[in-house]
Image (cartoon, rainbow, N blue to C red):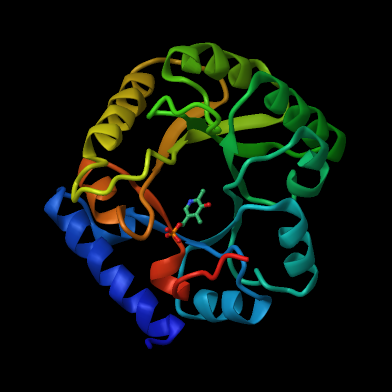
Length: 232
Ligand SMILES: *Cc1c(COP(=O)(O)O)cnc(C)c1O
C-alpha cells in the first residue's frame, strides 16, 4: 500500500496530465483532499504532501479535527450537506463553503458572516444529474439562487460545485461535467455583484481526470489520497 505522500504525488501527476491535455497548466487545478473519516494525523500528512486545501463533509467531525489542529497550513473547505443549524460551526472556520444549495442556507450563511464581521466565500452546488434526494440546486433554479447569493450581505460567490451521478461506465460522467462547464461559462458571461466565477469544483477519485478534461479547475479527491474508506 502506498503512503499518503506517494498517493498525492500520483494524483498530482494525473492532474498535470489532464490539465495539459486540456490546454492548462498543472497549477491551474486546485487539489482538495476530501478527508472525511480520516484522523487529524492523516490529514496533516496530506497537507505536508502538498494538497492545496482540505475538504470536510460533517460539521461535527470538522470541529473536532479543527481543535486537534488537523488543518494547520491549508485552507479548509466544507463540501458536505450543510444543515442550517450547523452554519455557525462552519462560517468563518472555512475559507470556502462549496456546498451552498438553497435560499434558506444562503440567508443563514450571510447572517452569520455579517454577525462575525466577515465575508464568507461560497460555491453554489448544482444537482446536475437531477437526482431526487441529492443536495444541490436544480439547473433551472440556479439563476434565482445566484441572484439571491449576489444580493445577500456577507456572501461572495466564487463558482460552482457538483457531485454528478455515480457512473459504472468509463467516461460515463462526461455528459454531466460538460453540462456543468456550460453553466459555469454561461454565468461567467453575465454580470452579478459579489460573484466571481473562478472555481468549477467537480471530479472525485474515480473521475477527476474526466472532470478536468471537461473544464474543472478544482477537484475533491478522497480515496485516491487516503486509501479506501471503511464505512461503518
Ligand atoms: C468524499 C467526497 C469526495 C471524494 O470522494 P472519493 O471518491 O473518496 O475521492 C468528493 N466530494 C465530496 C462532496 C465527498 O463527500
